[in-house]
Length: 341
Image 1: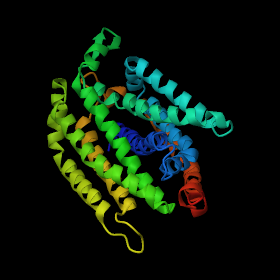
Image 2: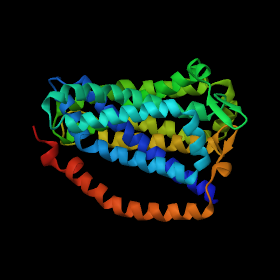
Image 3: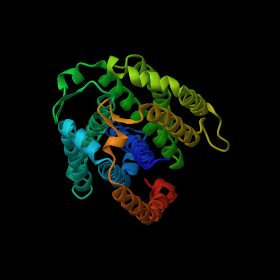
């Protein structure tokens, strides 16, 4: 495996991890807003998860950005230039969301505003983030000598952008519903579990349909990607099988528990589903970062920098992993925290 491929594999791993954690985090913010005063305590369940975890999600975002800038500086320059407006909006919404997350727990008057800000930003931030995918497929960047600019008019008139946004939002709400269903069951809130399970039952097929429509109506400029996706169809077939198993498990009986469904198995199988699909998509997209102007080989950093970054990440993850484990034990495993009123 070449250094460039290893670097993009690390990058893609960070993207996948952040997409899963980010989907659950932003989706939980949306459900906390929707069910703020719901009789089932579904909103409180979502907020209980959201309270200690939003900073962990931001940690993975920082790791992702540092990896991209370090491993592929030319790619970071290209995307940073053409994505200046979307990235600025993402940073703005993240800053506002984080600020209200902090102040809402010390100043009670901000709590209702926090729910609104967290819920709306939970939809806007993923929509802006996923806009990178259609842009990277080509056709939306104008190159005039060394000046690169984003063709905003063409981008916003393309159905591909809105189909990607639809797929991103349905995936976010589906994953967060599954997680919160499991979180509710562990918290002994069966009524909240039934509510989130119902959301997942509705959103599962919608997510699959949005992915199918995104593929079918992909912009003509992305014909190269469609051909490559067909070459990687085995990954998507396996992903579809994982989806069917995961979705069916929402009706499997659970021993010694009321109701039906096994939300934890469903969540894990769904993460596997997205993992398989992301492998197929990533392999189909290689070697391009932005088609057709920038490949991983052209954007790659110096060899010395690559190995220095590798050492830094190994040491950093070795330090962070025990912290993530302690966090999991305290806030996602401890029943005293999960079952508090």
